[in-house]
Length: 136
Image (cartoon, rainbow, N blue to C red; front, side, top):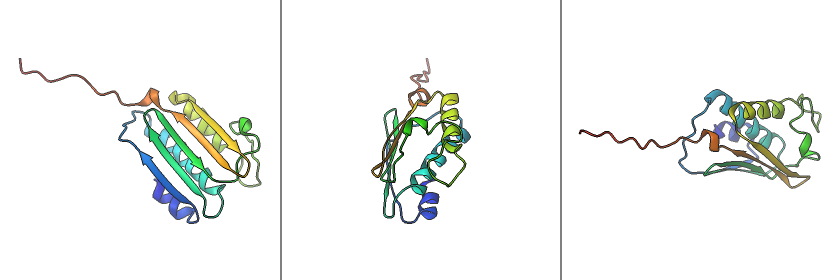
């Protein structure tokens, strides 16, 4: 999926660091969450900016070096937007989907420094089955 955003936002550098964690969740809903977050990270980034995607353990973070958000506590409100672009429902939908999937989401942002969005995916981590097939 990241390659799509690399084409869409060629001035932004995407860096991925993921462990081999398997998530068991609604694929369409989770893809929509990730697509929206990666799109925003590219769209509101600066020229030659960076987007870091890190999945480690039960934590998935998307951190960009973009413009930042003036009022991060408002971004999940329906129709809230800080720029003329968009209609202000993308992150509202992301929050709603995260709630439905039981994936807590949090945001940290500072104007002119970037935004970091974290998802706690512990509720959708694949559990390794300990069942061993015995021939006895």
